[in-house]
Image 1 (cartoon, rainbow, N blue to C red):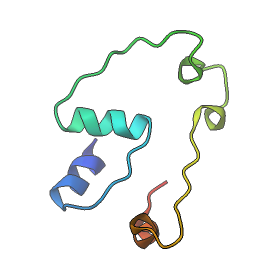
Image 2: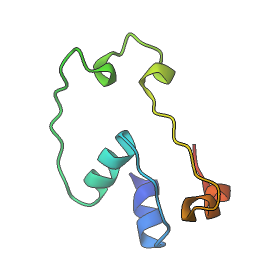
Image 3: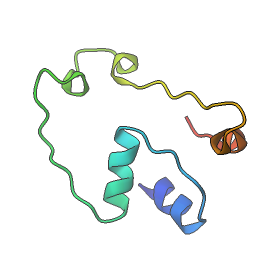
Image 4: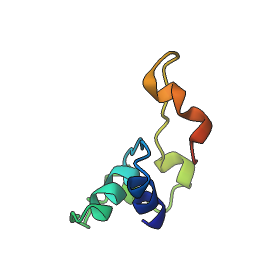
Length: 73
C-alpha cells in the first residue's frame, strides 16, 4: 500500500491487475468483500502462487510499453 500511495503521490502510471486493483481500491479508500467461494482459484491457498497469478502482456508500440522499464514485478 505504501508503494501504491507513493506512486499516486508521484503521479506515476500504474497497471493494477487482480490483487493490484484491489490494493489500489484500498489505497483510495475503498472496501473489499473478503470472502471468496472455495471454487475460486484465488481462494485455493493449497495451489502454488504461480497458479493463482495472471499473465499480463504489453503490446508493442502501446503507451504501456513506454513504461515497461519501470515495472515492478
